Length: 240
Ligand SMILES: [Zn+2]
Image (cartoon, rainbow, N blue to C red):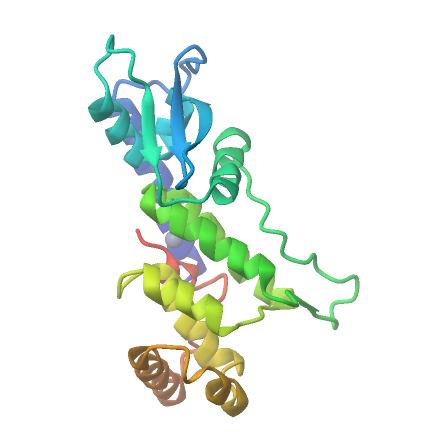
């Protein structure tokens, strides 16, 4: 299982390299730091000036937008991005330049027997917002990294689930989205969906969420295979 998971991840990397080669981009070619684009972010159109090549390498959305939005000599080098908030876009740009993401998930405790908790669910909400931005920007590698970080975190920590987390995911993803599958499997197998939790959220969440959760809980009960999200089955939550 672990082998198939890592080989799937590797094949994504290989595909990306192959795409690069087909696009005529040699992996060794120097990045063009002289061509910039301004992204007008959020409803207030906060300008972010970014190196076009780096941005377009990460985001097929911007690659398409940049080739569509302006002709080479038109001088119009702005792309509007009203649906992502500046705070989240800052995190995205950090990732584009540094190739890392810091979701602020609590670090592993010193003793293996202890567990840490994302107490108020802030880190999980940050992860969800960045995932949804990556979804809009078609950045599959970032979505995969976020899922991997969540899975690594639950090895030594507990995610705080509130109605707002479920609402955010349920309202902004399609039926087969990896993060939705992760949400259902985590809730169905972690013991977080207690009777108290269900009673407390029942007026805030859509009925089909509870139906899907009940089905997943029944499937977890029926099968001898663990449905709990783990490093070995992480590809269940990747969209590749
Ligand atoms: Zn995978």
